[in-house]
Amino acid sequence: MNNLNRNKEIKKLWRQFLHPQRITSTTGTVVALKPKRLALVECADQNACSGCSGAGNCCQKGPGAGAKRIMADNIPYAREGDLVKVEIETSAGILDSDTVLYIIAFVMLALGLALGYGIAASIAVGIPAAILAILVGAAFMTGTIGVLRFGRQAVIQTALARIVEIKEITPKDRA
Image (cartoon, rainbow, N blue to C red; front, side, top):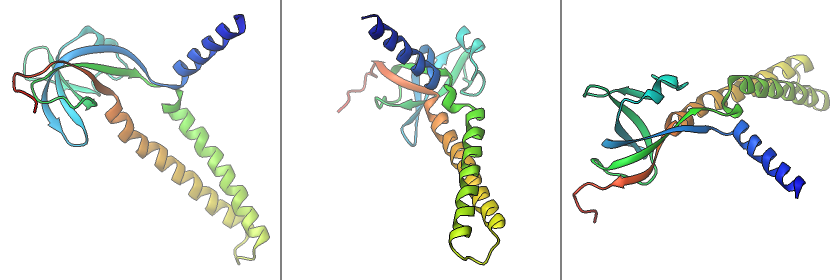
């Protein structure tokens, strides 16, 4: 029984270490619907935003005094005017850190160097083994950085805040 509890604790810590952590949620009104299942949600200015690591990056000033607008992933497909609950991910796990990005890129560089040298040694390609190894390694590293850096930005941008519940539906009937 003791091992079972320890394993559960280890799994819990592992999940917290690797995956984004939600530390705040708020309610707001959907003001506009955007393409790709996004919605612009207007919320009252909260004190939680000041301690957030993403403060100033995920929200904009709203038209009213003390109002903020957040671009959120519209999972339940709320409509304009709906009162919704928004969860905001304020810290990312280790998988989103730049350090891990460069470690993975370095591993891919080493893999590319080994692969390039192996190809040049086993097949007569007419290029010295060192040059081919450098070219393949650089291609692997550049490709990895490109995919992880630019592909990740699209995911993080839409996953930073998300609508998790529709609290009050607009008076217009949903058909």
